[in-house]
Image (tube, rainbow, N blue to C red):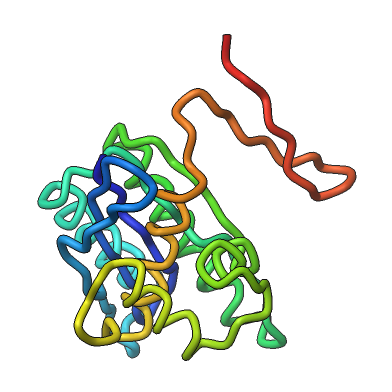
Length: 177
């Protein structure tokens, strides 16, 4: 199974492709980042992100896409821009025909390290270890995307649909029959 992890961003959007046939044998195939021009108007940046991601999807042909859910920081302007980028990411993923899985930053941290409050350095190191890489993946955005892909490889079940309960904000699992 080919899993493409995506770390959403408008200035830098990380991606990481892994391949796995079981939970224990994930291998990194490709990773990097898509960037947009900081000075360009937002519609141009979103178009640039869309076109670049379309190429990434065409070249990598993922079966599943693991997208990090948005974490709101104190800067609401940045949060809105990242949310808009995330919409583009989900659109491209849906158009590709790949299955989509979404994980919160804490879910990714817990899956890789066993600790939901792991540091950036710990996450980069665990992504390196899980994928048997010689060095920590760079840029950081690509390391985050690989971490999302590894999380998906550890948690993914073919027959599972995940829904978010709007009242408790917790995950419900529903089996497909």
